[in-house]
Length: 470
Image 1 (tube, rainbow, N blue to C red):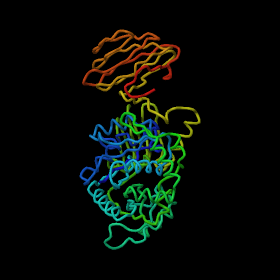
Image 2 (image 1 turned 45 degrees about the horizontal axis):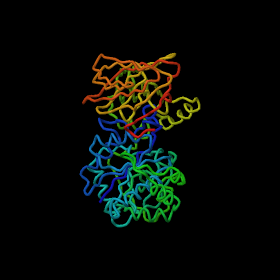
Image 3 (image 1 turned 90 degrees about the vertical axis):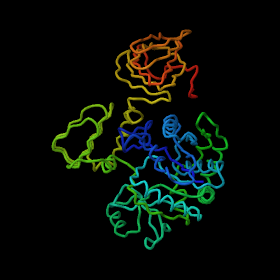
Image 4 (image 1 turned 120 degrees about the vertical axis):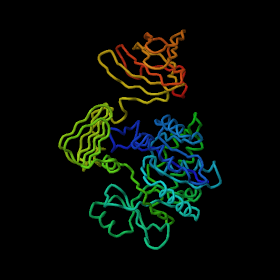
């Protein structure tokens, strides 16, 4: 049995302002009509003996992850929630300990949820080679054939890169090099980009991790023993998991083990780690421009424009990245793509929120978009999924006026329950217990006008909630 383990806990800071902490790149539709997480699983279709996946994600992303898995038919998935970020080694230990309960020493296919692979058939062939290596007791990793002297990736050095072998012993893992060193690696021919994807038997992995980093295994085992099932999720114990060191699987095991082999991969792989990588993968015009969204260009070259909500016009610029979202715009030279994450620290120092979430906020019942706000008022556009329901709640400092613009709304207001159709409205006075639900089969859209002296989200008391929120 092959169990995919999908690591979905990253934050994608170099893809800001599109990727945010509460809505990171693995949950976005960067290429096509499926998210990065969904594409990661869909490219495994056709792999033999494949079991439902184990997905390890941040607690705050749980509802979005569950919904995206359901959308592609992955309803039997195990979703393990990380209560605190502890890097890839503790996350993988949790997944492996859980996998023990699902089968007799299953093989784990460990993938990141935010990678792009263009040639799926070639990738699946490499997966088959890696499974063969794992069946032989090895820890297999995928090494990507380098196409350029890349300084943004770590590298894997193999002992032998000749002959008809499908995998080679690993000599060492090396950190991200400078340009001159990367050029030497490319010329030498036995270095590969470190993809961060692995295949191994559950028991082989746990045994070697216990030998090399026992504190990781001890913390993960205790966290899993104390775990509870919460709706679709496995919620591990926070205090126990916090005892795990914050360490990557490379540092904790792969760099120390003598049992690691490299399976070469040449399948159009990219970790889409920054906007330059995104531009590399995007369709371009004859001048090297990639124009996505509402945009007009005259005379520019090698430029990326990504616009979500308004016209962006460029005139005679070169080598720029221009990323427009409803609440933030990034303009940078592509040579600075790796430095975009430094903007996050400036935003944090100013105590702003644009690194955390978009203007449109996602909830398990749907989403809302803060359209406008001013002194004592805020206007939101609210979308509720079919069958979705907000919590039964009350506010002590604001009143709300709801106007239905699409679909049908079921409104509980005090002791009264009313059904509203398009162009109908209702008023929720301050201190009135209320709930909004969508009983229909199409999304419900309403415009909400809040008014009062205090309009922050923490002015809410929940009495009932369909999604287990406090």
